[in-house]
Each structure stands twice: as C-alpha cells, then as structure tokens.
Image (tube, helix red, strand yellow):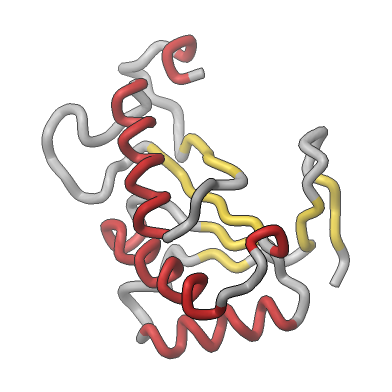
Length: 136
C-alpha cells in the first residue's frame, strides 16, 4: 500500500481508504461490513471514514463494534468523522456547526465508534447560520 502525508499534520494516510456512507448500518449486513474492513486493514488501508449522518449514526456503531472486536493497535489506523447534519434529530440545535452541536457530535461519535479520540473531525459542509469564527 502507498501512504501519503496528510498536509502538515504528520499523519501517514493510505492512498485508499474505506468509507461507510452507503454501506455500514444500512445497505449491507454487519458481517459483510466486518469482512470489508478486515480485508482493507489487512491490505494496508489505515484510514476509515464515517459521519454522524450515515445511517443516522448506526454506521459509526457498526464500525465501532468492528474496531473493538478486532482489537487492532489504535496507533495503526486513523478514524475520521464528520459533523453538520446530525444523526436524525429534528430539533434546532441537533445539526449545524454551532459550538454546541460540534462538541455534542464529537462526543457522540467517540461513544459510537468506541474510540478515545478521532484522528480527523471534518465539517461536512458550510453552515450559513453559524459564523465561521464560532465553528473554528
């Protein structure tokens, strides 16, 4: 597997990654998700991507169970998640890029993914209702 530097972060990221948008928690079974993730890891993929909105949070739960079961060294892979859309809640503060939602979404992702930290946490899209200064 080829690895690349991620900007100036110092992180080495596999040229291929495994994302869970249209797969984990909805379109495929958990057993197939695990097979895919294990095959990717065993072939050098070290970057696994997710988001709070994927299958309304279930995607992160599935990935978290797999990571916990496999018991891989935490330093051997990178996990990312994204914030904006929420995990399906319809209340005003359950989505967007307000400080409140970013903190709550990050804590929820950590719990669902069963990890102590995220290597990357992205804004899924801009939020016209929140000043960029608050988001940053």
